[in-house]
Length: 175
Image (cartoon, rainbow, N blue to C red; front, side, top):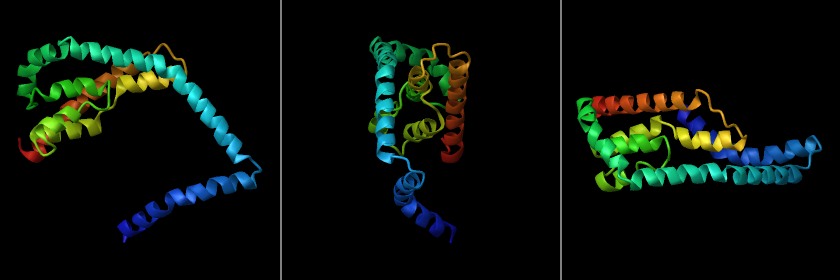
C-alpha cells in the first residue's frame, strides 16, 4: 500500500509542479517566463564566474595523477590499508573522491561492480562527498576566498566515510 502511494506520487510530482508553478505565477501576477529568463542569466553568470576555480582544481588533479604521486602514496599506505581490510586499489578512489565524482569508474571497469573492490567503491562513493569540488563551485560562486574550517572538516568526514564504507562492506559481504 505504502509503495503504491509513493509510486503514484512520484509519477505525478513533476507534471504537478510544471502546472503549479506557472499557475501560481498567474495568480500572483508574476511574469513566469521573464523570471525564468532572469534566473537563467544569473545561472550563466555564476557558471562563468566559477570556471577559473574548476580549471585550477582539474589541473591540480591531472598533475597529481600524471606525476605518479598517487601511485607512490598508494604503495606507501598499502600496509595500513591492508590492516583495516581495504584493498590498496580503493585508496586512490578514496583520495580522488574528495576532488571528483568520477573516481570509481576505472575500478568498476577493471574489477566489476560485484567484486569486493567494486562494492567498496560503490559504498564509498555513496557515503562521501566531492568536498574540494563543492568548495570550488559553491564558494567560488559567491566569491568566498576564506573557507575557514570547511575543507578540514569535509576531508575528515570523507576519511571517516571511507573507513566506514570498508567496514560495512566487509561486514555485509564477508571479505
